[in-house]
Image 1 (cartoon, helix red, strand yellow):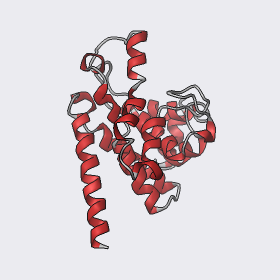
Image 2 (tube, helix red, strand yellow):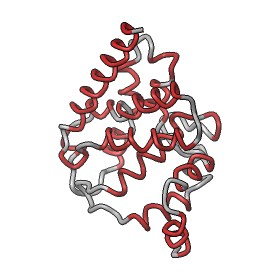
Image 3 (cartoon, rainbow, N blue to C red):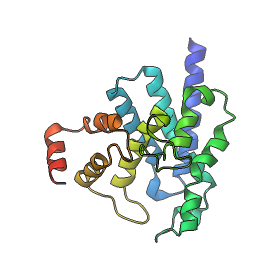
Image 4 (cartoon, rainbow, N blue to C red):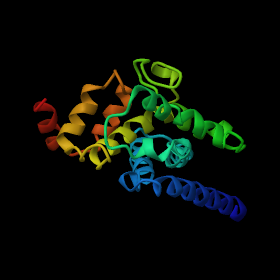
Length: 204
């Protein structure tokens, strides 16, 4: 039991180190991976997923953007609008991340690879890299997609300031069933104070 616990602890420390290496490339996304992991874990718990599933989602969320290590820095930190070609390069990061960590044996069966590869798929099938739709998208990736969007919108980026909470929650709610899994959105929104949430959505 002690050995298993040590392996899990070492595993998490390695994953955290990789996530920190990615975040350190860009001050605007510093702590992004940790934030997404925190929000993803809260959603998973709200959906009453098992402790094992919650642990996997937490680890996978820490690694979800690891493929951005392979994206040129001038694109990651560009202040202006991305060109079509630059956006295609950004869209390659899920596959780059998948290729980077696919050789880690226990990632194959536990869902971590699914998170890295599929967190930009959309519930309506308009996402990337494969265009998966609905329940074709692994549940863990559907959870991380909502957490990723929330943190991206509510933190300052090189190309814009952070967006306020009301606007962000409203946008996520409006994209329920489109970009996002409705069940995951419901679980996410239920994390907020009900009165505050009603005011946000009434303002739409």
